[in-house]
Amino acid sequence: MLAFSCVSLLILLASQATAFTFNVSFGTQNLNATDILPTSLTGLIAPCASTSATCDNVQSELSACQNDAACLCANQLVADLRNCEQCMYETLINASAPLPDPKAGSTPILAGYQAACAAFNITLATTQVALTLPSNWDGPFGLGLNTVGTVFTVGAAFILGMSSLLLLSNL
Ligand SMILES: *[C@@H]1O[C@H](CO)[C@@H](O)[C@H](O)[C@H]1NC(C)=O
Ligand SMILES: *[C@@H]1O[C@H](CO)[C@@H](O)[C@H](O)[C@H]1NC(C)=O
Ligand SMILES: *[C@@H]1O[C@H](CO)[C@@H](O)[C@H](O)[C@H]1NC(C)=O
Ligand SMILES: *[C@@H]1O[C@H](CO)[C@@H](O)[C@H](O)[C@H]1NC(C)=O
Image 1 (cartoon, protein in one colour):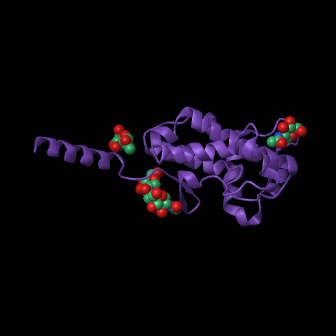
Image 2 (cartoon, helix red, strand yellow):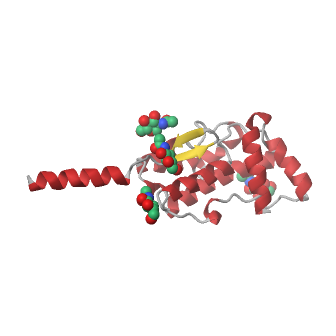
């Protein structure tokens, strides 16, 4: 009887601790951790799947965490995720290419990820989730933002707004 109550209490406590699922708010969507990367890394960003940035590894790490916030917000995973996004971001800027997927090289995804960890009382420093401009970036800011603008499609107007703002605040 006592054991039974203890189990019930544990279940009660557990269900309170996980009143909501880890999810990343992205535009109007709430994405599961496993859905934050583009479904397929093809074309220009294909090398990001397997080179030093290893987006494929990040996808496995995200799945392995099974929605556990402490696991998802661990420094190593966050660093790997950032590297993966940074790879896509640099690749697209290098090529001045249109965004193949709004989740590729995305500052909003990373900002959403930071907020999702914060909802579980796990603080990620902004530097842990900030993307940096490629080192060969040489344009003045105005021109620079124009060039970046060509990276983002009109269809991703929301993302463009967010990214430009975040980019500006980083400059
Ligand atoms: C998503 O996370 C937010 C906190 O960031 C939370 O309020 C919301 O309930 C979560 N949604 C689901 C479906 O768990
Ligand atoms: C997220 O995962 C939960 C549980 O695994 C599932 O019920 C839900 O439909 C998923 N949401 C999305 C947007 O895929
Ligand atoms: C972008 O271009 C710079 C200079 O050419 C290069 O060092 C960097 O590795 C490139 N980044 C990617 C992701 O291709
Ligand atoms: C986060 O901390 C606040 C205040 O300390 C607390 O009310 C809340 O339950 C905590 N949330 C989680 C998911 O631990």
